Each structure stands twice: as C-alpha cells, then as structure tokens.
Length: 528
Image (cartoon, rainbow, N blue to C red; front, top):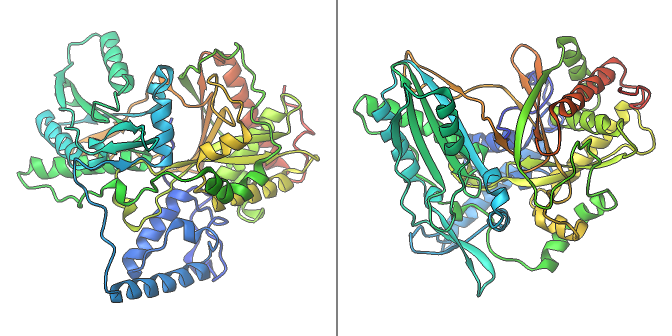
C-alpha cells in the first residue's frame, strides 16, 4: 500500500504573511514530498538548485535563502570552469550500477513469496466517452519513452553488485472487451494483472491493459515494479498518459518533458561497510537499544516465509476530534500529521501490553537531484523512526519526543535500510521484515487521477486483494472538509478482521484521549 504526496501537516497551509526568517519548514507541516516540490519551485524562480539533503539541517526561510545564494555561486563557478562534468550516457547497452534500494529489492525478488509485494498496481476507471484505442496509444507512448521502464537487472558476480541495462523493449499495451464478463472473471483478471510477478532479468518492469466495460466505462490497469518506480513516479506516469491522450485525441503531437535517465540522479555504486557505518553512526546510536520487533496481537503465528496477502480497513475521526488534534499538534511546536499519527499508533500498541519502545518504518521521497521532480525512477528510501514511551510522558511530552526523533531520522535520510538492519538486526530471518513489522505514512488530500478529456471522469479503484511488505501498514490522510481518515492494511495470514478492527479502534480512542487532554498521561486510560 503506497502513500502518495500532499501536504503532511495538521491544519491549513500557513499564511505567507505570518512567516518569518526563522519559520521552520517541518514545524509548519512540511515533509519529504513537499520539500522536493518546494525546492523544484525555488529552482524555477531563482535559477539555483538546492537538494533536500542540504535543506534538512537548515529548514527555515533564512536557511533556504543562504542555500540558494550558495547554489547560485556554485553554479557560476561551474560555468567558469574550463571543463564541465559530462552527464551520464544513456546507451541501451551500457550497464548501470543499481542503487542501494534497488539492490535490496533485487535480492528480495529472489524470494517468490515476496515478489507481488514489490509491485505498484493502479486501477483507474474512466467514465464517459473514452476512446480505448487512443488511450492504448497514449499508454504505449508513455511507457516506451522512459529509460527506467526499459530496465532489466542482473548480478555482476565479479563486482558483486547488481546492475541494469535500459535495453528491454516495452511490453505491448492490450485492449480487452470485458463488457460481457462475469464479475468473478473480471475480478480474477484484474487481480492477475495487478499482482502477477515480473521477471526482472527478462521482462520490462511495467505493463498495462485496458478493459472496456461498456460505452461509458473503461478501466486502465497499470503496473510498475517498485525497483524502477515509486508513488511519485506513478503520479507522473498518469499525468503524462492524460496529456498524451488529449493530444492524440485531437490529432496533435504530445508535448512531454524530455525523459530523465535514472542513472543521472540516483545514488549508485558499491561502497564499503566501514564507510556506510561511519555515515550511519549517529542514527545507529539513536536507534540502538530499541526492540527490533513489536508485540503485535497476532491471531496466528508467523510462518517460515513471510506471506504478503492483505486487506484494508478504514476509519474516520469525528470532526471535533480532528479539529482538537490540529490545535494540540500546532501547540507542540508544530507537530505534523505524521508525527501525531506515529504517537497514536505507538500508544495504541503499548496499551495492549508491556512494550514501551517501538521502531516504525516510514518513507522518504529521496529526490535529491535538481531534475528528479520529472524523473521516473525508484528514489524513495525507507527510514526508521523510534518512539520511546518509557518514563510515563504526558501526551504533550510524547509529541515532543516524536518530533525530535523524526528530526534525527530526517537528518540521516540517506542511510540505507540494510545498513541499519545489518547493525541492529543481524539475526533476522525471512518470516518478517527487518527491524520492524509496522509501516507508517501520512498524506494530505484525497485527489484522484485527472480526467482524460472534457465530459469524462476518472477515479482510482480499490485493490483487492492487497499485498504488503509489512505486517501492518497505517496511512493517515488529511482530506477536504476537515476530515482525518485512517487506513489500516493488515496481513490476513496473521490477523483476523476483528483483531485488526480492534487495533484501529484503539488508534481512534488514543486520538480522542490526546485531543481531550494533551497534558494527561497516555496510560491513564486503558483501552478495552
């Protein structure tokens, strides 16, 4: 289950008139995806590129101004240099080193039981007069133009490193008339389209099929392997498909940005364990001592190999509770929606047992390079957040702890997850993910895909079944109308629906307790 972009704070965007030179980006609700978007806009306006990594230690208006000044000076110096560095070539027959994240995904793909969990499937239903042949041509064009989507991977045994070539022809996009299909046949077909594994050494890592369900109903099934794409990439692809459709439908040539080769942008190449450990030292010190597992309320024991099949439950916080949460979070030095949700989940789990120290996984956008906002590729890194409830903190104190812990994770966002796992979870097995079985994310906005033409509609269809990388994944969404929604995906081989529903109810109860009295202690109320 992938959480996509949007503003990650609690409450409305700040009034520009209230900003000062010392206003903190993260205290105002910023997060990694928004940082990438903001820095891309800063580059457009000021002609200077600042990476998210450089911005993290200085996330203020004054800090950004200084970084932009330094970036402009560096750009002038580079222009004056006698020789400029050549960009990475994009020859199809050239081998490119996989990034650390891609290496991890490639090795995980060696396990058949995990292959479906590393796909990004998307079902879009179009309503109205959508021409399936024009849509097919638009999807063909978009999937065929990006080097990342032509990648095939292999292990260079001599260098002991995974590499890839951008030489694989794209998979043909097909159109099927499904108007007369039985609903069970349609569900089976969509499930197969979404979750059938990809052979990373032989097949293009992207595929699509268009199903016509009637004159005014068309479904696009788009699937991309996570090794070459992330949620941001998925949104870019859908936007390009819409642009291409509108142009082709009118007989024009689609105007799309020049595709970016991911080898120009992603951090690549092997590095030594000693160098990685040196870079990770401060983060390891912060995480060391926390349990690398969570006492989850399993109904069945873990199996020898992790199973990824899952399903989804949702809940909506009452409007009054959501409004009070926003006020409390803003009062605690501007905690974000993500930070608040992390505290709520940790308390809900702690109330069920004796554990008071937790590690949660969460995503970081990782688009450092100036051109990364328009690139299709896998740039996300998985970060680890520690939440320590020991010592009976009040809710307000807990939010402060979570905010500080998030800052530590943000400052070391480039440390590969495998480096942390090797140091903190060296005895891990294949029954569960490394370091933690819980994944957490937050997003703002519940916007859907853009309609391809006037008089048409577009919406995402739910995925059933789901496949997860973790045992539990919680997504908090701040949406229109002051709504605050929670979505809990859970592994069906470990939890019954009743157990998962009870845990989600516990999170809502924790939210109500926090909103009612932020100066109380989280354990003064015991959730049934």
